[in-house]
Image (cartoon, rainbow, N blue to C red):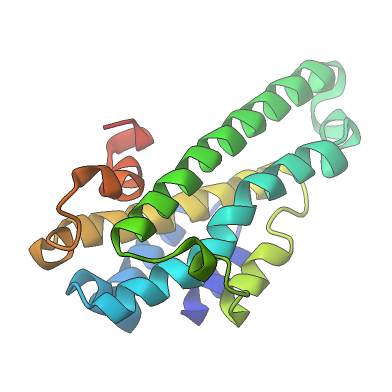
Length: 193
């Protein structure tokens, strides 16, 4: 799914609504996603194993951004004296997002286990697409960072809605607990089921 790399690495700040619609179109037309929605066991395995490195490393990348890249200078020129409290608020929000992404990672693993994918299989090396995504998803200013986060959530939302709309997909998960990742991303405001 090379389109994922394009969408995640070329997000244009200020174009989030257009990007959300474009992501929906691409998800709708992707062959692997279509096979997953049809309940194809090989496609579901490829999807879960292929994206596990990204799902696994994403929370740590957010933490690294907070620790290494988030600096007062990023805010000072735009916000003056308000930069310091704004930086604390932004860092706190990013920390909460990282924690939520850890929960999402656990839900991804639970879904994979329901498909009888072993932990060893989930530790498979990166495929080129996920290697490109994991390299450095957060560069630039905080606004660019939030645009990237929005695109990640948009992809997850569209994937989830598409999957959950298919009876053939749902039959692969007789234990509803294994659907948490999909449910969390399909619900409005990414609430808990």
